[in-house]
Length: 291
Image (cartoon, rainbow, N blue to C red):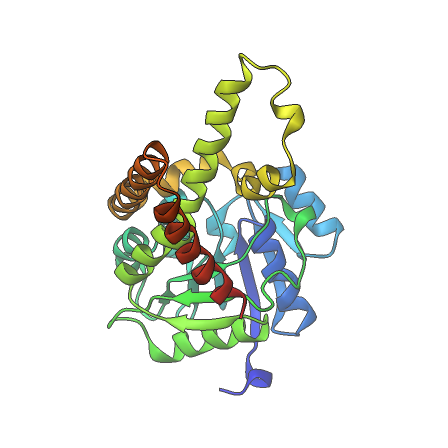
């Protein structure tokens, strides 16, 4: 399919926040959607989305919002994706494509795919993009440029629907990768979920120390702020991600704990050569990511 041929007469965005709002902007600016309906719980956010021209209309009822939609994008907390789709499913028209932004795919695919009515396709997806800010006022159409979007179709997924969703994300500026849900969840546990766990724990560790040293946080330098930036992310969202990807996340925490024990031993033994090797190995790998 050529990019210029992609067109949805009506798109429904369930969850008009940073991700959903940014995609709505892309759909409008690129002429991919004729009419955009926003669906959400917070009336103030929905009103802001309409005022900003991100959506044309809104409703708090998913069943009402998806009626007549050719594309439904579900961008709600990952634990609520299946529940939300279940409410909307009976009102989806044949030919509609449902896709999502959940950062855990195994359980989402398992729970959502069986909900699809005949003639409706579910293409599980995860645009790996975002900031620490939330809400539609943080949305921007450039959010996905240069980022990766992972799609995890199954043998049941309509290939034409996959191609349309792939084209949509490419128009948004993303590099699209197709893999299976298990591989996605294992990869994300390492490159996204583990770093968030470390950032949250580091901030809490320093916070505990700050109770006995009131000036401590006042001396925090740029390195601490930069490293812990992602600890400003939504606690609700990350608690849900942990619950839904607990197996792979605990595996990665175990591997990280083992590395910490090695580092602790080298420090206790004042093994500067061993420490140097550990640091050089990390530096080489980190530098290779910038090439």
